[in-house]
Every structure is written in C-alpha cells, then in structure tokens.
Image (cartoon, rainbow, N blue to C red):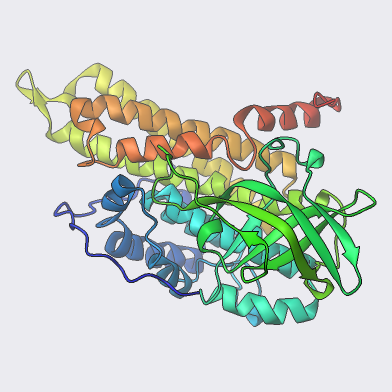
Length: 404
C-alpha cells in the first residue's frame, strides 16, 4: 500500500525510561528465543513509538509509517510458518511481542494483531494454497495492509445475526452490507469479510480495496485508541471473484477462531499497558516530594503500588500458562476468554491507580497514564465485551447457555 510520509512532529524530550518488572521471576520460564524477541521489540518501541505516540494520539492520527517497522521486527504473523512470511515462533513469543507493543500503545498493538491474527491467520488456516502464496508474504512484509470485517452496526456481540450477504453470480459473488468499528479499514488494501450466503451459511471472503462499490469511511470523534485508524466497511453490489472465497471453513467457527487468536494476543498485550503505568507510577512516587519525603514513603501509596504489582504478577502467570497450553494446541476458547477478561480489567485498574499516584500530572501527556487508560476502555470492549467473556466462562463451567 502507499504510505504517507512521516509528518514532522514535536519530539518529546522525555526519554522512555521503562524498566522491566518481574516479581515472580517469570523470565526463568522463558526461552532464549522468547527473551530475544522481547528485547528486540522493546528496543524498537523505545526508539520508534515512545518519542512520537503522545503527539499522534493528541492529534488523533495513525502513525502509518510504523507499519513498515512492525513488519521489519516480525510483528506480523510471528507464529505463522516462515514459508508464508511468518516468524515461525511459538505462541508465547507471539504473546510477548504483543505485550511489548501494547506497552508502547494499544493502537500500535492493534495494528499488528489485526494484521496477524485477523487477516493472515484466517488466510493461513482457511485459505487455499494459492491464496496463501498470493497474500501472506505481502501481508507479512507490510506491502499489503489488511482488516477484518465481522462486527456490524446492529450486530456486535451477536455476530450470528449479521445482515451482510452474498448472492451467486456465476464466477463471482455479489456482496452487500456493512461492517462497523474496523481497525485499519480506511488504509487497508484488503479485508477478510464474513457474510451469509443465500442459504444463510456464513463464509469468509477476501475483498480487495479496488473493488467497485467497496468503501471504507473513517470513524471520527474517538476519545480512545486515538493513534489507531478505525472505520466502516461498506459494500454496494461488490463483485468478489469466487477464487477469493476462503474454501476451508463454513459457519461461525471461522471468525470465532480468529477472535480467539486475537483475544490471546490481547491477554498478553494488556499486561504491557499495565507495566508501563506501574513503572511510571513507581518512578514518580519515588521522586515526588510531599510533606518533606517521597510519596512512596506513605502507606497508602505503597498499598497502591503493592496491589498493582500483585495483580500484574498474577496476570503474567496466567498469560504464561495460557501460552504453554497454546503451544500444545490445548488452550480452549473459554480459557482465552478468561485471560482476556481478567488481564484487561487488571490493566484498566492499574492505570486508574497510577493516575491517582501521579495526581494532577497524571492527566497530562507528560506521562502515558491517561492515554493507556482511554485505550483500555476500548480494549475491555472489543474482541468480546467484558460481560460477554464472563458469560463464556459461566457457560463453560455450568454447561448452561445464558445467551439464549
């Protein structure tokens, strides 16, 4: 895709001083390759994301030039096979990469996780060999940018009710409908879209940007994920060649399996946002003097910090165990839902406590706290809302379906 040149922005003088926090020595459970991946992505975030992200978020502009950097550090499809352009890494390494990206910004992690989990993954898992060869290498190297079309204006938590539809037209399908809240949509070269055929079966299609009748207007006015570009997908008699249909899946299991992959990445990613907030709060509490001593000296501040690192540590262990199960292809969708729900809620609570420790300074862009907090208000809703994930766990442990 054609990228806009990086605009000149005011560089923040404040250096990214983040220090890793690992209270239970979880690093001892990680392989050398996983630690190397973390170090590479962390270094890139410190150099390329942290100095500019506050400016982009303030202007509600997506730093599209970062797509190329994300490709170069292997953030697109890191756990997909190398023969298709992926990184050939394991699921824990994938999770660690998402964690480091979200420490920089949830929107930057979204740029990568949508590309890898919601575009490359369904093409890899459900696509034909020809589709894999045609699209995956270019998605992996950032030459193409993709998006994922499932959510509709009137069908969010209930994707089975989708109205987007296709009808047979010889060697193609005619696609009509719309999708809403689609990350990367306005800048994407292609979209993996889920629609109902004339028999009501849900199928996946690869819809290319230059298709007549296909538009992707930007959604403006967001107070959250301001450095991520979000839009709609609108299809008005769009002709999609039948060779662009994903041949190896029918039904909701297709998009839901993609969501499980994305939710897994979020379970790790949210820890990164929490770590960034905790790190900033700990440093600030040691430096901020009130009543003649650092505020870290006071019991209530220590209570906040101690509870923050306790919850972060629990989330780190939850994510590591989930990653271990994923490496054996044994992580269930319900287990992924539990981790996504718990870790995002944890991160949001940590951000709120960190904001209090920073006092009035916590609402300024001198610190990352409010940006993370606003971003997490979206993360707690997308890829399944907080309450929906609770009901997924409830159904799993009781065997009773509260959705019907």
